[in-house]
Length: 219
Image 1 (tube, rainbow, N blue to C red):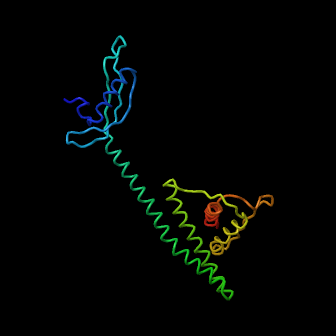
Image 2 (cartoon, one colour):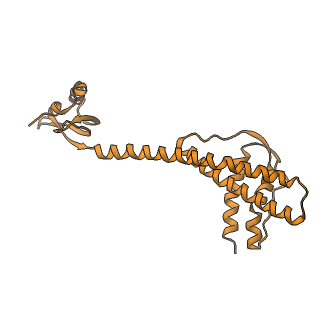
Image 3 (tube, one colour):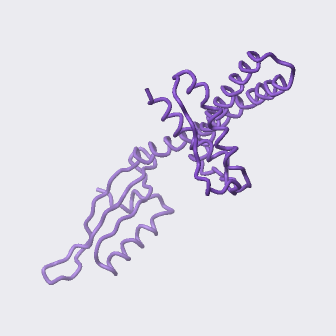
């Protein structure tokens, strides 16, 4: 037995009345959302879909409409946004935590590579270095994913050597290629410029993903 104006929170009562006036002044349809108070005194998120009612002579005689309770939908969306934010923060923190010691491992491997080694030892270290680089690439993928979700992914614009970047992709894929006993070569058009400006890390990441899938599904 209450009017809508009776359940709208006081600060929004004027807004609701203004919506009535707007609709009566410009007959047609109207959609908007508002917070209302239910019988228990809880705040509900409500959607209003309304239209002017016309008599036989075409004059406006009133307003009809449907009120839908969107509280659960909005609450679920807000909870999902909070969960996504927490996930992004977790991925970013986890990536940083793993990447820091891994950088230490790759640094020690580089130092070992510069020490006197037998041929076999050099091959073993190279494989370990390549594997560490591949793992670091995966971690960077995870970190990039969290940055994309947070809208904070940045693309570098630096000078780089294209063929050196391509060579690093070959090196990273060498263990997979060797294990599957297949040939893998990256060839470039001789007319393709070697010195470019862009993001070599992102380019290597994309090529590595594509080439890794190619190797994986080659039998």
